[in-house]
Amino acid sequence: MTDYSAMTYACMYLLENSPDTNKEKLIRIQQSMDDALFDNALDFSYPLKSKHDIVVLNDGTYSLIGSLGEAFNVKVVDTAKVVRIEGRAGDYHVHVRHDNEIIKYPASSLVYCGNNNTWLKYDAIEVHGNLSRIAPQLSARTTKDTFVKTLLFNEGQCDYASKDSPACRACLDSCEYFALVEDITAKTIHLRMSDCTECGACVSVCPSGAIQNSRLSVSGLISALENAEGYGVLIATDADLMKLTSPLYHEMVILSVPNYSLFNELYLSLLVLKSGGEVYFPDMTTLPVSTQVAICNVNRIFERFGANAIGDIVSESRHSKCFTPIARRLDNLPLRMAVSEGLGSLKAYSNNTYTLQNSLFSDLHVDDKCTLCMGCAYVCKSGAFQAQPENKALTLNPALCTGCGHCEKVCPEHSITLTPGRFREEETYVTFSAVAKDEVYCCVECGKPFATKKAIAKVAGMFASLMWDDVKTRTLYCCADCKPKLMLKEHFDKVTSKEGY
Image 1 (tube, rainbow, N blue to C red):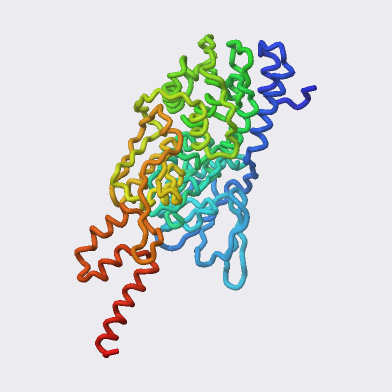
Image 2 (image 1 turned 90 degrees about the vertical axis):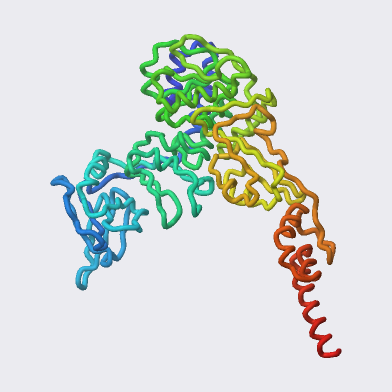
């Protein structure tokens, strides 16, 4: 029997409002979805103490002007005298050397006055002298009683992190609340949870899934959908459920969310694939513009299966499932890979090509100039390009492309073309297929395969004119082991000939 003693609000709402007669099964499914989201959630909170105590770490680069206002107790310390900092945002203790003793100053927030903020791990706000400019930001922090970890960040998937020339700044540009900071020195993005409002803007624009909401992570969402058993899904906040007056439909479960801005094309595509194309919001007209655009794009992608896959409840018009919910399990897959696997499982291709507005999908084309240097596979974090050395082939899955453009930049042959927003209803768009292949070239000395014919032809074409004898020309067609042997043999042959041996 179902345990009704500790139900979520979604369970209680379904118990009272769902027209299903088999409430036992419905609540079991809803509880399993809620449990999956809870088990995969990584949010936690910690108290905000000493709300009005601020320590300014001053390295002497700028003269301090302005003030933070009478509401704050400000202590300015020389960075050269800081011994260590303990605690976390909301409850720091800054240990400062003063004469022959160590003085400890409490602080809810730290401010760094200077350039190249080395205190980012302490959520320090950088200021160039004028303290008045950051007063609103610090005041906003004091309105909270706790700081909550609202975001998850995977550097391995991020197209900004670890790159000398970052190709993606989508999350940084979307954040209006100083919660995401560019850490130029470390070549990464710092998440400042003390300033995050959980608006969801950064999650919605991230093309790789590198930034996720801590309460609605990719793994949590996929696990919840696996437990939904193909039922229709209503995406709603608890606040909107309380106001909802339109009746629910049979075999419908609820995906409880913090807000709607979190949903981009990738998240919505997963919902459509696992529900069979029966996804609803309470009222489409009240959604953020970014979410409405994403819904239009997803409905366009699944248009070939019939009616819109995503609608709303207030229209009082239930749409039929577009297709049988996919059975392919998508657990433990990155966001884009899960979407690609799901689309591939449908095995329904119309060969149509179209452009989506403000889309996270892109298309890639590799022409026959490719010499299989595999530079694109090396720089591609999303895994859209994969090297197949055993087949001397380069394979590509365009659905995995985040549109960063690194592959275009590193390609020495300029054989890669990136087209943002283009979606193809073809098998080669959502599965891996060979886009370049060549025959193996064997060393002319030892016969060992070491390159492709295209690569050797390119190198020989570039350097043949610089080789002034047959031996040096022959080295162009040798493996790395035979090149030095051939050169040394020529050298010793000449020495031996001169000395008369």
